[in-house]
Structure formats: C-alpha cells, structure tokens
Length: 330
Image (cartoon, rainbow, N blue to C red; front, top):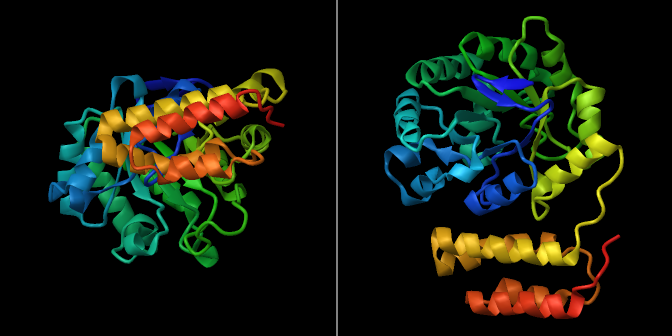
C-alpha cells in the first residue's frame, strides 16, 4: 500500500498528471472511471487566485466523484503562495500540489515552475512555509534539474521531504530539454533508492505504454506512475495499464462505440460545467485523439471541431455511430 499522508492508495497507483487545458473536471471524471487512482487539476496561478481572476478560480472546481483529488498551484512569491493555499483549502481538495516543474517560458521567466530549480533554497523555503500553512498533505511535482549540469534531484528530494512534503513526482527531463529527447528514469530511481527517503516517489515522463509502466515499477522500483500525454484522448490508458499488470496481456482495443460514448459524455459534462459556448469549444481538442487512425474520417472530425452548437456535434457523433459503429481498431 502507498500512502500520501493519510490517503491510502493501491500498490503502484496511477496518477493523472496536471495538464493545462486538459485536466479539467470532465476529463478527470473520465480518467477516474477508467482507473486513475489520484487526479490533479490543471496548474493554477497563485497570483491569479489572489486577484480572483476568473480563469484561475474556475480551475478550483472539484467534485466528490473525483476523490482523491489534488489541486496544483504555482508561483514564486511567498506571500502570494500562502494566500493561495488558504483559498485552495476552501475548495476542500485531498491534496495540495506545488508545481516546480513547468518548463514554459512565461512561467519560468517569473521564477515559478521549473524556474525555481535555479534556486533550491527558495524552493525549500516556499515548500516549508506552505506545509506549515495547511492541514492538507502537500506534494510536489518537479524535474530532474534546470539542465544536465545542474541535476541535484537527490538533494532536492531530501530537502523537500525534510520540510514535510508527503509525496514527490519527478519528470525525467530537465527544464532545458522541455519535452524533447527521452525521459531519464535513472535519477528518479536514485531518489527512490536513497535510504533517507520514506515518502512515495512517483515517476513521470514517457509512460506511453502499459509495458513502460511495468518497467517503471519493476526495473526502476518507483512507487507509482504519473500519466500525462498518453491519456489525452485515451482515458482508458489507466485501465489498459491495470489490465496488463493483472494479466500480462494487452487489453482488447477500445471499441468505436466506447469512444463515441466517451466523446458524448465528455461534451455533455463540459457543457454542464462551463456552459454551451465554452463547453463546445474546449472539448474540440480531444476529438482527434478519440478517433485517431480511422480511414475516411476527416469530414466527420471536421464537423466536430468546427461546429459551434452542441446539437451539431452530437449529430456528428450519431453519424459516426451509423457509419463507423462496427469499425475494428487494431
């Protein structure tokens, strides 16, 4: 059993990574249904929260069916981060997660996200004060280091554990790599194998197949896997991994009818959450992945991603069911 504070999780839990414009309540709900053990919100700006910016505040929405759920925040100003913790607590998440890993320039340029990897002392100070400010378990998501020459993740992990975090997720790339090249899980295993460490260590980056998840568990000995890009358009990835763990075999391909049902439900939940206009607009990015690799599908996908009214999108789903309902995925 793996524990984040008092939260009990199964052996080698699968966590849905916080992904901007992806990990919203509808998508989290679908992933939870398909076996995600913990889900995280999109990352939320501490500065946006304390200014009551609508774009930030709406990301605090969580639902009972998602639990355990973590709300992830980012920032580099101590006062703002502490005020943000107080705001986040009112949403009653199970976990507060600190983003020390986002490599995007607009975040890093303010010293936040992976930018803080240049100042480990500030990272430690921020974390320490946030742990003291909340009764909730605090976790951290970070990267190996700023660049190849500044990888100090074993030291960073010790220092974060010493100030009270309850779990650490590590992406196996440096900030300089962004998302290029291959993730290196060896330094993450070094953290896990450090006899001083007693909190769960979760691996992230390039967990793209059930076999890779098994490798992270069996070869690298990590406590769990945080799944990001592989789940986009494929909330069944969690179920696929668990089936492989249980049987050693691949789960049968997800059927066309299952995909259509997920797309319908995704759109409906998005509309219920954000209203017709935004619900239709923000669900579009998922359709390409839901219906990837189907011959002669382009006209139907075009309808899905260009229609401004939900009834037109639902009608496109109906057409797909009529035309492609018995399509067999390889």
